[in-house]
Length: 352
Image (cartoon, rainbow, N blue to C red; front, side):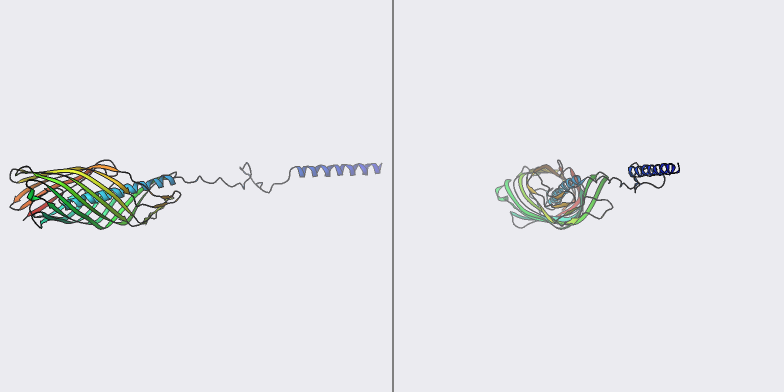
């Protein structure tokens, strides 16, 4: 009996050990199990999902096209201001004069005039200091010089042709350009500072008619070529600008044809009036922008042909013999990138 009990005890012990072994290997202990309370369904050491990538590189690249529009407008505005120095608001044929002026809309102050060199040939010239802004850019310092030669066939009589050839020079400008783009985390707006210079040459052929002692009318065709050199720059350092851009030094170019006319009339004995205007068409325009945009690569915007109207006018009040006070206005009318602009001012002119 004792042997039977010992055998039974041994068999029961072996069975218990085998059962415990099966339970251990069926449910092994996990190294990542939590020691205390845990809310992780798959374990506590699982990494959180990465945040979504910031998007907006395409918007940043598209904003470079806005810079090209600003630079084109800058060329046109610089030319419009320069034509004031060449007597755009004055009659084609008149006596020698010199005028000091100041204008608003774009701040400008300067002096210009004309000098008869022979009975047919006159020199037109002027100097001015300007500040102007339009469509996102700001020119904060720009000296402008202009001069031209005009040949008027006075010996042909009261109805005759005339020709101009001249240039507008702006050798140094301080300028700020702006661009904006959107990202998945919000909008980005940037202002970048650099230097630029503008140059233009033109030729003009027209026909003048002295309709009466009080009236002069003229029509003309002008051909212009404009260059604008802009120094390279990079976006300013900001807290958030994931798709920054670097713009290389480059030269913008365009060609213009203008068909226009003007009329000058003397009201009574002391008030002069002038209106002028024309249609301008640009062609063979080249943007000098080459921009490296993070996430979007190299961007080189293109510019198509543009068309707009230019206008001007002047009222002159003869305050005493040889002295005239002038009120004048000049501007553009048309779609962007030229748009609608107005530049007006006052001048004091001395005829001699």
